[in-house]
Image (cartoon, rainbow, N blue to C red):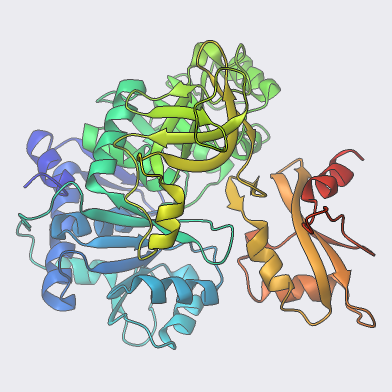
Length: 512
């Protein structure tokens, strides 16, 4: 068996090589490939024998970054099962709905989310077993490490796993309703790894992963390709600028990836001036264009070279890359497609457009996701009859085949690297009895890049306050989705077709 059993193969080729450092533990825990593989075998045996997990079944994880996330991911791979990676920033009501939709048999969770898990446990769900990573957990919950070490270490072999079987579910924000679960196949993981290796990864590379593991950025951009390729991954529990600079130096990381907000938070850190980053071959930035002054600051002060990346949950996630030598010359570009990615710009009739023309970015290739879990309608809307994935992004390319994003998916904006979808927030606002009309837009913010602003028209004779509406939103949404401010307006700009003209609202707040 090789499909799905990444660690089983790597443990044969480099058993004593350092695979993972769990820097969220004190002291740091280090695992060779042989040790990491044994942990995955133990968990796979327990999941099969005690939980009754079979091929195609799901388990869920609601956890901070740590070795346990990888234990679960690789154990599921050995069984042909599916790991559902839940966003711990979501409200417990949102999580409950996602769990209802995906039907996991077990849930692994971190102590920080105990109160949410208790709320989830009170619902009528498919979960039969709970595993807590830290603390005492709740009644009936089993301690993860104790359970793992008590399970047999024998190799688990599921011979009928194929490259088209699903390895995990990564949730992508939806423009309407709940996030959709992108189905990440073993085929997708392998082709993304090949794209990544061709692009920039070496056998002896060391990286510090600061993206949350429930994100495609945390699990799939570099972590999984590095472990397939035999490198070393350092896992801090979460992003902390001072700690990240320390880890980059302590473990002599050879490359690092982040979003612009993270790089902006590194330079004012108290240990920035003394941090030795000379081992970094390059840094990758994605999520939004990296400001040129920030690139120059890193280059001049630390000798760091930047690559601009572009990806998405449903494809790759490594799709485009802008090499270091073009960071300034092609500033604002997402680069060229990675080796095994085909990209086009098309018009409304799906016809390819020439250089300089703005249209929709569409993608095709073997690193595409297998649609959305239990959502045939959304899958059909995203993938056309010729196999092109429609991103919804407006883009263009130049005469040198460098691509540029012109406008984002519909009304989406990005705050601190997180995709924020206004329609989801607006639905909650409309639940408030005083709200007649509303629109949420992204406005510039020095720290987060963009933050949400809600524009609200109240019903005649109704009264409410900004604080009351923000509390209403907080009771239903993850904190990072809640707008930072609310403006009460007499009316919203409306088009002749009866649609709210959000671009006029954006212009109002960005031109001031």
